[in-house]
Image 1 (cartoon, rainbow, N blue to C red):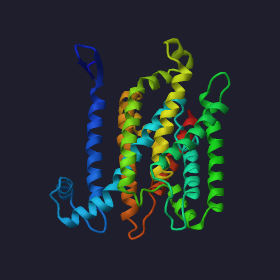
Image 2: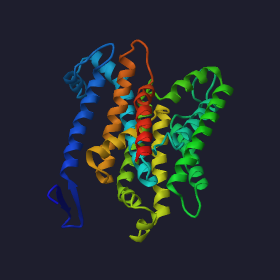
Image 3: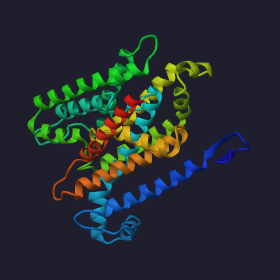
Image 4: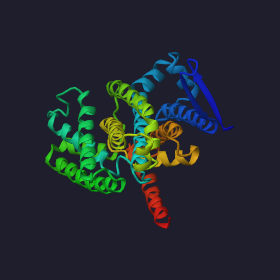
Length: 351
């Protein structure tokens, strides 16, 4: 127990243990996330040093710096930050409740369901001037409905007196393929000017992010992250297996369903504003597990920071490495994630 520090609040009314190693890893990653945020904000056609970025954020920058940072760069970087956090936590929850290291929102179809809903939303509510005819606040609602529909289908079709983790993955992969087919059909049938935009969006990008989107996504993400941390102990119990979890008094199927909805909401929020950025929900929890172990009290916060760094770094590479071309961030997360997925398959086969 020497590696843990106990904390008590309100004369012991609230008490918990903190893993000192996990806390150190979290603080290091928090510093890395902050540096990535500042460095990414300063990089582009006009380069601004991290200290100048800080001065500008504090309100002491030049007019040009404030224009570049506040109007062009900050919205997309904040969206990238929120997307990385959301996808990483969603992936960690799914891997916990399904008890499968290959589980992630994009692999079991949740991302695909959100993508179908968003493409349908863009097709139905766009005018000839390429403008939305309904408020943008409805976009995450559409994504959540699509993601929830797929999640419920996965849950129901895998139900045989209970939801088996293996059946959840297999059914999810099948529905993911169906969602991709429906998305392609909508792109073909929809307006040509929306098809090109939606195709880039499906790959995953935070290009053209706006402050209006930030105002919607940030509070939604904060609320969902808080709810995730409240339910985190249920993920730890789920990993014990259905019989042991039920034996310690956990309502296995009810908690699994609630956790699935939380992961769905996080994924839908991310897909609504950044598209189908893949493999973040797969990679981030795996890296976190190697750093801090499998306890979800430490795993989810560390996963969130790793996810944030991955998406911000992918966006930074996409908009600077091939300038003046803008490469979607999803291209780079897929380039990292696909080989890692193959590695996990190979390792699981040998085990």
